[in-house]
Image (tube, rainbow, N blue to C red; front, top):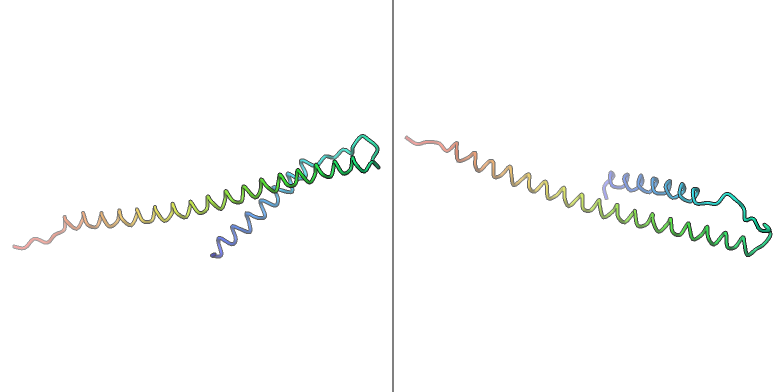
Length: 106
């Protein structure tokens, strides 16, 4: 892996972590349960919901990461195809121009 790819991976990871933290913060409920705050079952339920939200966010981030990696692979394949086409076009141009500059023998 070259240095640019590593930098992109690091940047992508930082961006995804930032999004993850924002999503966790956005879905975190700021209100305490209205029932008795000492009720363990209510706190456990609240904690389980929070863990479920985190798991869903982690799953979404994992999916995004895999999609981004797939897109990067497709971008590289497309770039290789375009370079190959450009090379072939240049070759064909050289061949066609070569026909016009055939030296005449008198």
